[in-house]
Image (cartoon, rainbow, N blue to C red; front, top):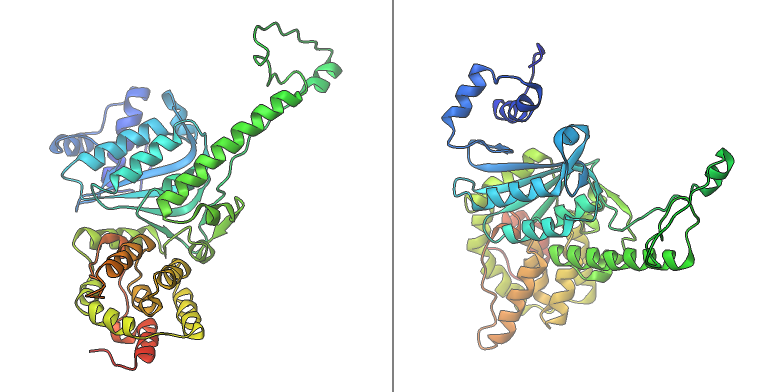
Amino acid sequence: MFDTPLLIAPQKLEIILGVLAPHLGLEIPAPAAAAAADRPSRKPYEITPDGIAIIPIEGTLVHKSYGLDAFSGLRSYVDMQEEIEDAATDPAIKGILLDIDSPGGEVAGVFDLADTIYSARTAKPVFAVANSDAFSAAYLLASSAKLIYTGRTSGLGSIGVIVTHLDVSESDQKRGYKYTVVHAGARKADFNPHAPLSEEARAVMEAEVERTYELLVATVARNRGLAEAAIRQTEAGLYFGNDAVKARLADHMGTRQAALADLRNAINGGTAASIQLKGQAMNEEERAAEATPSAADIEAIRAEAYRQGYADATEIVDLCELAGMPGRAGALLAKQTTPAVARQQLMEARVAEDAPEIRSHVTPETGTGAKPPLADNPLLKAVERLAGKGVN
C-alpha cells in the first residue's frame, strides 16, 4: 500500500483497503480483492481463523463520526454497536475480544453501547483487554465484558464525569469584541462562552454531571458485579497493571495474546486444568464446608488469594461469612469463582439444608486461564489444613 512494505495480517489489510479505497479513488489490489471475494461477506473487524471477532475500541470515542474523521483518531459508538451486534448474531463467530486503547470520550451513546456489550455476553463469550489504556468511557465499555485483562503497564479506571465551560469574555474585551446575544427562554444562553457562567447555569451543569455520574457508577457496578460504593471509592483514580486487578477493575494480568488464548479455552469448554478442577472441586468444597476456620485462618486465605492476583477475594470471603459458611471460602477462591457464581452457589446451599453441598460447574466466567495443579494450589492447602484432610 502506497509503495511501503507492511508487516500486517492480510485480514487487517483488507479492512484498511476497504475503507480507504472509496475515499481515495483506489482499486483494491488483485490479491486482496480475490481474498475478499472468497469470503461470504466482508467484516469491518478482524476475525481469527477459529472464529473470534477482535473489535478495536481505540482513540477518542464519539457518538458519531463522519467521512475521514475516524482516521484522525476518532471511534464511533454507532459503528462499534453495529460491529458488536453483527458479531453477536453471526453463528460463524464463537467469541468476541474487545481490544481497547482509549482515553474515553463522549457521554452520548456510550451507555447504549455498554448495554449492547453486556447483553452480548448471554450469546457468546465476550472478553476485553486493556491494550494499553481503558479510561473513563472506554473503561465503561470494558466493564461490560465478562472478563478484563490488563498488561503490566496498562491503565484502567478514571470512572468519573467532567465538563468544562470556557469563559472568553475578558479576552473578547481586550480584543475589542462585544457580543450581543438575543434569545428566547431563560436558559437558552446559559453556556454562552462570551459571558461568565451564571450561578443558575452552574447549578444546571453540576446537576447533569452528578446525574451522569450516578448512571456511570450504577452501570459499572452492574457489569462488574460490585457494590456501587466500591466504584465510588476509586474517586475516578487511574489504576495501572496489577493495581487494577487488586482494585477489582480487572480480572487477570495478561496481554492480548493471553486474553485470546483464554477466550479460545472458554469457547472450547475450558482448559485441561479447569476440567480437572471440575472433577475434584466438589470433594474440596465438601471438606471445606465441614471446617470452621478462625478469623486468622480466613485472613490467611484472603491474603494468599491476593498474592495470586485474585481480585474478588474480599467479596467471596464476605459472602461466605454472611451465608454462615466461612469454610467454603477457600475452595471458592481456589477455583477463582466470580462473586455472582459464588452468591448463586451459596444461596443454593442454604436452600438445600438437607444436602449442604454446592453444585460445582465450570463456566467461562469462573476464569479459564491455565492454573497450577490442584494439589499444589496454596488456597486448597489452606483448606486442607483447616479440614484436617488431604487432597484425593
